[in-house]
Length: 403
Image 1 (cartoon, rainbow, N blue to C red):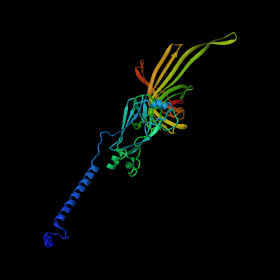
Image 2: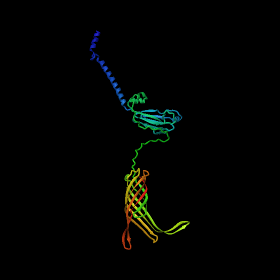
Image 3: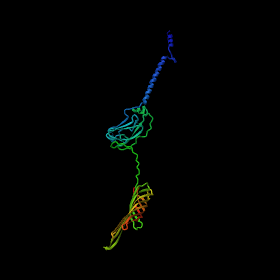
Image 4: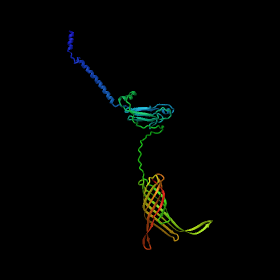
């Protein structure tokens, strides 16, 4: 009776498609849902944690140079202060901080750290940088030396790498793929002995300014002789000219010359002898002088390149003044007259360079001018014009400079 009732009761209970009771199937579904919810929460939390920016109170990697470091080095002790390679990570530990607690200054790159000073050097991009540092031991047996220290910046790739850096787990951090070194952002400094001075900074050199060539204005001074037409005697010639160079071959400017001639007439009054030496006594009968002064603008053409003998030619035109003076000591009569008129000159010669700015030269020239003056005749009440021919040729030699 009892077994029959149990079988009947079992037949009455609801069953699912798999033959399991409905209540057991419901409990199993609830367990699977709870497990899936917990797993999804864990995955979501890990995703947010991986993408959430990591911030820290300090991004500096501090290295302290303790007191007595310099004394130890001078005593020959190999005292390690700074490692040969320092690893920093962008965004976490990306600032190198050096503090000098020693009694003497220390050099780090171009910066001089005075006792008690702290120096911070931030890095923003992955790179490998090399610095000369007096606080870093190179292992060589020198009492005073400078050695090189390498600072390597690595990018922050994953939260795992950041945590490995903070927890000082190099095995985890170095599990990342190797990062190719970037170009150094700071130049490698040559070893320099430390000096006691204030902190100095090297500013960037400016580009050299373009210096425009100044205009050249050669000047020449010359002396020589002038031989007027129809006159048996020569005049002494002296003058100068100068002006700017339009280019390497053409010069323009002004010239001033002076041609001087003096004559006198003497007669012998008596001849005697004193102690066997003949002595002549003369008397000056008359004296005369002429001075021709041309003031002219000129144009000169230089035909050479300035490195060897330079031929040249020129032409000038302007106003010329002639001063005549004469005295007759027998009659006491004096004659003074001033003549003026327009004229021109032409010349040709060659110059020998002494340097890039000076030359010796010699030239032949010809002068043409007809100068005159108006004269009033008090006896006849007429005015007439006196003309003097100032034509002639000559030679000039001198020095020119300013090229």
